[in-house]
Image (tube, rainbow, N blue to C red; front, side, top):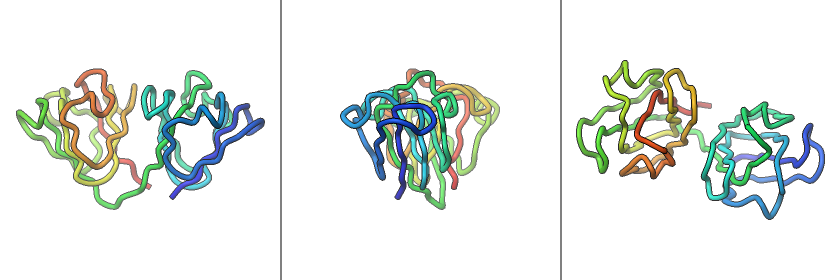
Length: 172
């Protein structure tokens, strides 16, 4: 499905680890990560093991040092391959456990507040496609990967609070 190579040193030098799928804990393979090459596919990489902490979306290409993927340090401890899907649909709810008003999306939304007159998303159901929730409008701030499935509360997608500023589909 994908292929990504993590290098301990900048400019694709030093010890490396090749991965073709999800890896919950890379610390037994590499001690740090200063460069990455994505040879096939899209990946979400995480600063902490078990898909936790700051997330970075990487597509096919070379990233010779961590600031090229907007990383703040050389900590990359887990990754997930993102399969591309042809249809996208997400149902957003203003309360936990699918309560309150339901709002639907099938396209990108640069400003949740402008579109729905609220930016509090407490739960969601992803019917199709992979999505990114951003803390701020215009796809800025911390991002969260939202895969197909049901999320009864924002903490299930890793959110620190229920504020969602913008939403984007992951497209090939």
